[in-house]
Length: 254
Image 1 (cartoon, one colour):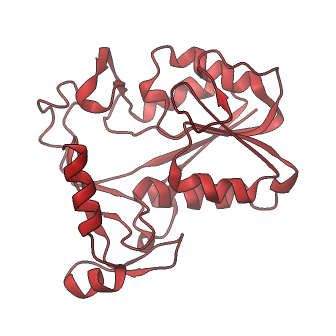
Image 2 (cartoon, helix red, strand yellow):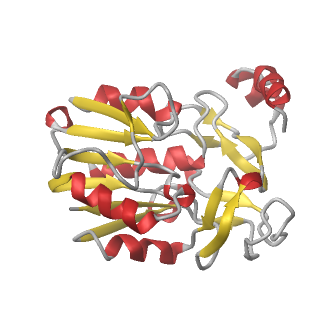
Image 3 (tube, helix red, strand yellow):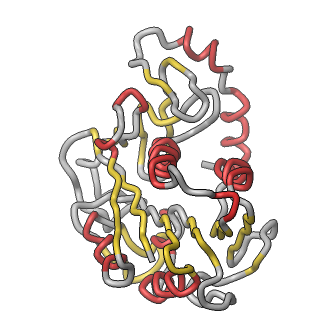
């Protein structure tokens, strides 16, 4: 979709109270981030439509809600104000929230301008054991040498540190692409749950939180028709049955 058209559609979205009135028959949910109660909006992207995906008040998508819940559980009881955090490819949605939570909050990316460090995740310019917490959401599916990137993240973590490294799990088994797919936001792979074995080969422990680990009222699932895959935009994705799919948040411990 052209950028100008996307901007028009975003501006055309009604406020949350109006959206609630306009969709009286859609299922009702509760956003764990902003406490909105009511129907969630559908979301269009390159792979098709996702139903009940976006909170009309704060804009949280399924992955944001799931990651928020997983982070709250993983960080419970930790003194985050004493922790140094690295946020790679910082999403606007989480940037303000995480910067307020951690004592030292730093950002990095290979191409973004508004970051603290211009860095390649495959070759991080930081000494060993620099950070207590690393967050890189939906990054590694874009990285050619992801094993090297994972090893670099482990290297810069302090003993007892944590890395949260979600990827979009969109296939039963990971499919590696021969080249980046420009129609798929430059993805070089379509991860499956087996992708997390790459983390287990490097980290001492990996806790994987799934959509089913949290109340369904928060709508942490991905409602999407994957039986239609492959498509012209996603030619290497394999079909999956059903219309409700689990998402996952792997929490890796140094």
